Image (tube, rainbow, N blue to C red; front, top):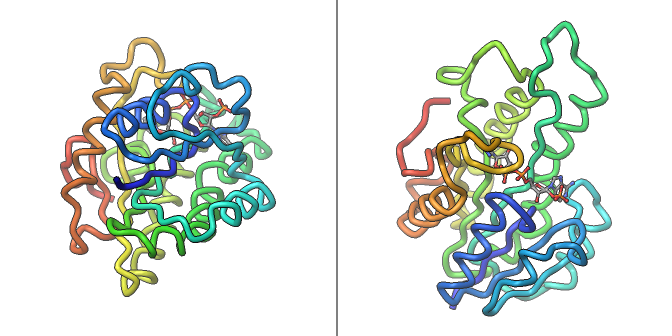
Length: 227
Ligand SMILES: NC(=O)c1ccc[n+]([C@@H]2O[C@H](COP(=O)([O-])OP(=O)(O)OC[C@H]3O[C@@H](n4cnc5c(N)ncnc54)[C@H](OP(=O)(O)O)[C@@H]3O)[C@@H](O)[C@H]2O)c1
């Protein structure tokens, strides 16, 4: 069966992805900062292993990549993310929080992608998925809130776009997703999309990807989104 590595798999969208891939018989490498307290994740049955991973740490990421050396990863799902300053105006911006947001939402997915590129290149499906956001689209999502979060996802989009061009010759397909406005700790209780529906949509899109889709920005229902 194919394999998937998911970051931030202990709650929200990452947890739904882990549950669904495991229920379909995939080998799931579920990562989170503190596997010891990941009660929901530990309850998932199937071919699933939990690994400690802080995506902002070079040591943590390279240690896991080393310990999984020579294990192909069909889908690398860079899902972990933060939104620290939802209601803050630009004038109120806290630069340390903005930097932290970039660390988690931009630098970390690229760090993880670099570390696990050999594992993905050695797999059959060769997919790197990144959870971006419609809020990072300058064309459709540039509202008057959440400047730090929005700008981090815009930067992620460009970073992944560049990477997708760089590594296209390795057959790797990079895809950026808007997962929907999802009912999670980040998305809030009133969000219209359930984590299971978001995860199912993105999994379905991934299952149909071809090399021509490398570097695309997609909604969880498959629609191509403007940058
Ligand atoms: N929910 C939405 O409406 C929505 C919309 C657009 C995009 N997104 C994106 O979708 C992704 C998942 O969001 P979500 O709604 O599921 O959020 P969530 O419920 O807040 O979960 C965020 C996940 O990221 C993990 N994480 C944060 N910092 C980390 C770090 N340094 N190392 C490893 N893991 C870390 C968290 O782990 P801990 O439990 O250890 O904190 C948690 O597992 C994010 O990238 C988010 O930006 C969400």
